Length: 492
Image (cartoon, rainbow, N blue to C red; front, side, top):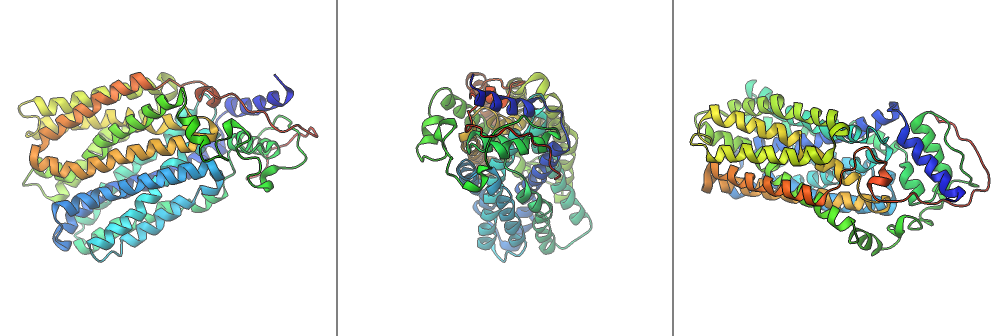
């Protein structure tokens, strides 16, 4: 091994073996507040469309479109930001996506008819998709080896708080008797606040050390960033000056040239073993989101069929209870166990229990009609969705692709997931009308079984490995050092 490769390995080892510190949790908070907003904005629309149906005289097709259009728009956002992260860097893109989300959320509160609300929800979705593509990769590239699953998972677990916040805020407005025409505007507009709170932090975050070294070849800046993250003196690396100021002149030099070439990233992702991995991450995320978003966005409609005489407030409180008792603990149990039992087991096990719960609702005589049978099984499905593939499909793509194409691989995977979410949210209202609750749950059981099979066949276990090992990527060499300099941690 050359001296340059040895320096590179030492930098990565410093990141991998560091204890979790303040900079790690700052990154988690900065990313996590975006995911709180993502969940709130994506799921509050189910309640909003119920309120808007008599106001805007919505048809079933219009309800389906409003419930799902943000998910379709997020496909474009994930693909765009994932690719641009690899081309221009993580730092340049971070904060742009959440700013788009904030603008969209504010605009939705002032929508005047179905068409305007549809357009503004597209803006929201585009920002959400960008957030999915950027936050996981940035957190993963800053994380240490032993706790990477916990750190990336903690970002995603903020979605659980967003799931709780949506029905909680809706219940407050409905219970307080806020007029429906004002309530839906407040519900949508409030989604801008948590996202706006972290725009500054996202714009100020440093470029990840793995991108700056592996793709840009900037050894001096990388050493500074490693010291900033770990709070300790970094391994010495040579370099006359940071190449940060040189733009993208060295882009594509390392890690297969994925940045500088339009075809390079396609060649790498289409090669072994990455094509199978991409099929695994994108396919399992697609299947998961068909079930998750199909059931979650349409939960007011499902509960209305289950309890025709119940009020919207009653159904909102039931949704809140399911999220609080089942979904929310599932997120955090997954975070706690991610680095102990591994991603793969959590994912296939979650899919399997989801399939069993959905199948029982479908097959039992009272499964789709009796509240006392349906709600416990539905809650079990939610617990194992969160302590299962909803968490791991977010973590996996940030770990098992090389640095030069990690953003693209993550973006494609997230886009596939949101395509599944769009189809689920779009089709479930129609399936409920034609098949009923039992038929919908039968479809979800089949989808979950496919998720088990795909996970077992296509995905490796990255638990406990360095990011480079998990991605089947060797550490890149860096430019020939001209001076050996020790760099101490800088203040944030």
